[in-house]
Length: 416
Image: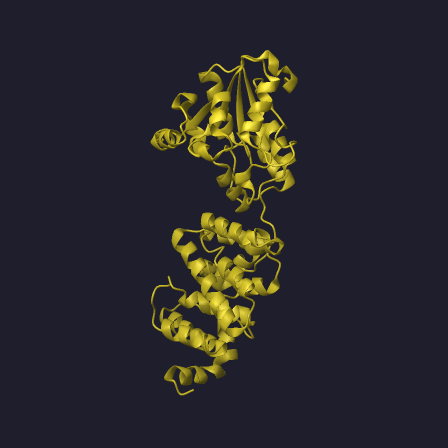
């Protein structure tokens, strides 16, 4: 492998910049395509340091991203990885990197900068874009059929010549680092999306596992993004509705609003797994399957949800986990948070209408115990008519709260 001190020997080089979080086959195919199509002598991969547009985003550490890039490119003699950006203090800008390369390369060396078409369309927001396009040629790699008109429009606005741009189609760009990170987070395979060496590195160091929500507020946003990937659109809308309704109930009844939002957001995190996957996960997490859970595998999702929240999302708060675990069956002597999520699940805004939904909502904002008693009774009666098996937890819960049924009727009649 050549060192940066050897750059003066090349007449043409291409710079492949990016976060590489992680580096995948899309990056490698793009670099190799550019190398071959433009007859480039050397391709320099430069993991980004601290670019302004990534300041508020969580990324893997510099060393992890650098080493993964080294592993991914090691078998290509035309590829080299540089630390120049991750070792540079302060904010890192492409213009500074290209200027440094201009200093290291021979004077007449032609430098190409490879970037995605979407990033290229934002070039007018980069530091000194006019100067940058004079120092190097921008190679915008695109997916087949990409509409380049937006890029040309932005270049005209910035008075930048389109002649400084080359467009190349690369089919493998359909692979994305975001998708890979999300797949790791939900235990889905990333095989054939990146090199085996990088896949093993991610597994060895446990990269892209979600951190406990207590660490910082922005993690809630990342949990939301992950759920958006895990759940169907309809289920995701429902979870957001339950989270928001849980907060309203928490405000009304003096419960912890942050815990209410988190529990509501994660209550159905295991709902969209298939029946086969649910049974497999029950075995993994040691959840005992009685006759009811075997015959109605969907009923396993609240118990699995608590384990998934703990394992995949790092939730350790037992109050939150309990609210997830019992949001479907209920139980005797429920905590305030358990009651809140259990009830919010019934009447959040996107929930389809059923007999009793308005009454449950009306009661929930007046008296949690009365609302729980009414909803348990209503649900059990409905399932008995459908000749479905009733989980013992629900039967014991109704027995525990049945004394509140009379109060529920009084509240609904407006007599109190």
